[in-house]
Length: 314
Image (cartoon, rainbow, N blue to C red; front, side, top):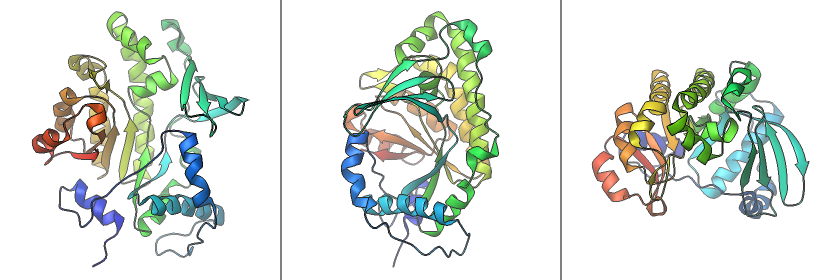
C-alpha cells in the first residue's frame, strides 16, 4: 500500500502510528545551502500543471515545483508555503561574505552569504528607548498582498502529497529579531523594565495573531513560529516570567489555529523542560528541535508527554 507524506504527518499529529516516520531536514546557513542547491537547480522537474484542485500560473508553478523538488530530494514531509512575518525592506550593503539588510520595522542585520559560515548578526533596532514605542509602526498584517498566492500554493502542495505549513514570527524571538535587542537587552528589560517589555511583546503579539488569522483563512493546515526560549543550561528567563509575558500569546495563537482545525509547530532550542507542562496545557501539537544538543531528555519527554505532544527532532 502506498502512503503519501501528508498522511504520515497527519497520523503523527493525531497520535496514531504512521506507516512511515516523517522527517524534516534544513540548513543552518547559506554556505551549507549553496553546496546543496546546485543539485536541485539542474533540470527542475516540470510537473504537470493540471490539478484536481487548482490552476496556478507558470511562474507560481515553477517556484512551487522547485520547492517540492528540494523536499523530494531531502525526503521532507512538511513543506513551507508562505509566511505572515516581517519582511526585508531593502538591501543596504553587499559584499562577498556579508549583506546588510533592513527589515520592515527598521531593524538591520548583517547576514552571511554562501562564502561565510556565519548566519547573521543583529546591528540595529528601532526601539532604543521606551519613548520609541509610540513612534513604532508595524506593517499592515491584513494587507492581502502579503498573502498573494498562498491559498493556491497550499492546495497544490496537498495535491502533491506533502503537508503544507505557514509561518509567523516568534512572540519572544520576534521582539529581539526586529524591535529591540539583542537578546541580553530584553532579558535585562524583563527585570528592570518589565512593563515596557510587556508593551513591546503585546504590540508584536497583536501583529502576529492577525498575520496568523490571514494564513488560516487561506487554508494552511499548520502554523509554525521560532521562539528560542533557552540554552543548554536552561530557560532564558524564569518559567514564572515566561508564563506572565509570553505564554498568554502562545496560548492565543494555539487556540486560534485550533479554531480553524489547524495544528501548531513551535521551534525552540534549549533545555526548556520546565516550560513543557505549560505548552502541553495550552494544546501545542508539535515542538522542535528536541534532542541531546539542547540537553533535553527525549526519552523521558516522550514517556511523560508523548500522548499529547509530538516531538520533531532528536
